[in-house]
Length: 238
Image (tube, rainbow, N blue to C red; front, side, top):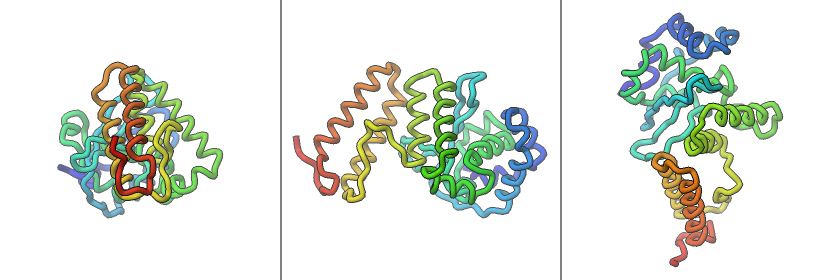
């Protein structure tokens, strides 16, 4: 599979600029900043891993047109990539199906839009991810993006999926989620991750929102019964 850096090297700023203006017309005034980000990416060495990306569409004519999801290896649980280092972005593998849907410059434009959500330089994104909790403007931006997701995805299950991906990227979790604690055992952490994968897969397969919510609650309750002590190496048998 082609990595994003290889895709970028087969484009030029003129083509990417044209696609950004067409796909995201409300951000035309920021094209100089997008160009600076594009040029930084052109100079940056990729950090190749085992993650592939796919591009999804929100509802037509909605606030947000696209979303990007990353998948590590064979794990079916996707995650938001907005805040990962740009070296890792450049090393992401592009799902082959995307080449049938988009030109190289379009893929780069959509990725550039997503990766610069928190800043037009890699150090700005890093700073946002590290310090957002202390800055009211950053918190308002996060809240606004949550609202944009709600306005852009009419399916309540998919809306929850996209919202969870975004919040998990910031290490934020719903109040109903199983809490993360500092003294988690390795076994507890792995079991919690496996539960999160199950929840994510439910979001990909369930069509009825009430059934989806009931099954998610059941997974959480079963997990908490089996793992009342996060520091333990072994679950309760029940």
